[in-house]
Length: 287
Image (tube, rainbow, N blue to C red; front, side, top):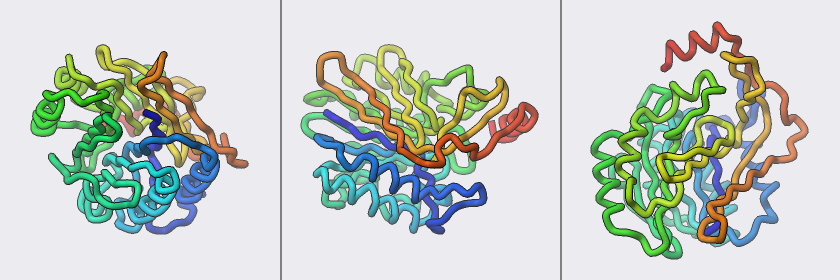
C-alpha cells in the first residue's frame, strides 16, 4: 500500500495571494506538478484544513485539483476535516470525504464527517477532530465508540487511521502541545489491540514521527507553508515551501515515510513570525 499524504492546503474562494502574499491554490498546483512522475500510488489522503475559509468554492477546487491528480493514478481520495474546515460545505462538495478515482462518493459519513472504506484489503478510517471555532481538536465519545465498533472486526491487511489533529506533540514547539488532539489517551485506548498499522495527521505544518503506544504516527508537513523549528524558543515562524509525503505499508521495514519538497523559488521566505510575547498571547487566547 502506497499512500500520497497531503495536508493543510488552506484553499480559499479567492484563488489568489492572501494578505501575507501566499497563494494556497498555486502552492497546491506546484506540489502536484512536482509529483507528476509519481507512480504506483494506491490512495491519496488529505488530512484536513482543506479550506482556509470553509467555502464551497475551496472544496470544489480541491476536488478538481487533487481529484484530477488521483484520477490519473486510478487512486481513491480520502479527506478529513481540520480546524479551518466547515462541515456543511465539506459534506456538500466532498460528502464523507471518501471519493473513488472517478470522483464518485465511496462511503457515507458515519459520525460527523468520519467514514470508512476499503482499498486492496486495507481499511481507511477518517476521523473528524474539528471543534468549531477552536485550533485544538477533539474526537469525543460518540466517534470513539463508533471507531471501536469498526475496529472490532479486523481488516484483511490492516487499518490506516487519518485525522487532522495529531495525538502527539513536540516540546520544541510552543504551540503543538496546546493545539493538538485533546483526547489522545482515549484514542489510544480505542485502537489498543486493533489492526491499526499507522495514524496519519497534519495540522502542525511540519514533519513529525512518534508513537501512540505501539502505533506509528506520521505528521506530514503542510502544502501551503511549513513551520520552521529553528526559530528561537517560545517563538513561531512559518516559511514558504510546499511539501507532501509518501507512506509505504506492507513491505519489509514498513511503515516507511518519504517527504517531498516542491522546488519553489520562494521557498524558505518568511510567511509570518511571532515573537515570544505574541506567541504566548496567541496560545493563551486560543489554547
